[in-house]
Length: 212
Image (cartoon, rainbow, N blue to C red; front, side, top):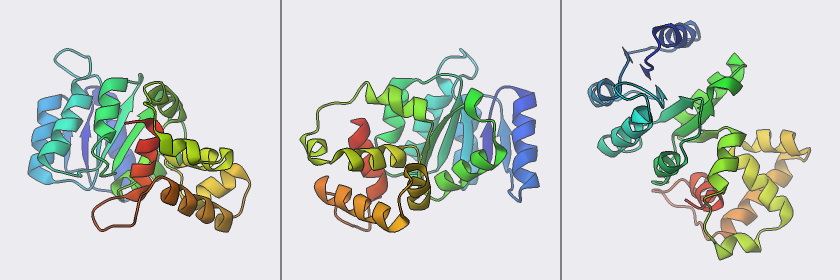
């Protein structure tokens, strides 16, 4: 794992957490250019990157994450931030390759949930804070395919956008896992997302929902 965070305290805290749970941190950096260089050098299973980093403390980290995925396609990245940078967050999700997370620091209070999100991202899935989903939805463009979804299917898709597994969706909605699988299969069909070797249908469905 590569950790990119300008706060030494947070950086070291994350590294210790990862290592105590069996992970390996190959690089800890404090600025955006060093993060891109570390990804190119180590090709990590997953990276954690802060949005606001030196030199300008604006959106350098998020732009560096986009650059890292351009140079190393599909490299998994989990973004941590106090804010939702909608433009670049949408761009980060736009390639449809999966392996992307965006969590708000103030809401990351449960270590088990954070580690679960990290593992989902490393495995090619998504992990999006509900507030991130809500703000990205503001940018949604019209997609007529979405109009074919039932209200229940929209609820399932919203839960998928948060990065929940089928079991997680089922528990959140109080339905069986089998019912969840049927809803998701229907969603894939209505959004015209056939199963292929080159696309992550779950991520593409979320992107359609977010209008990216």
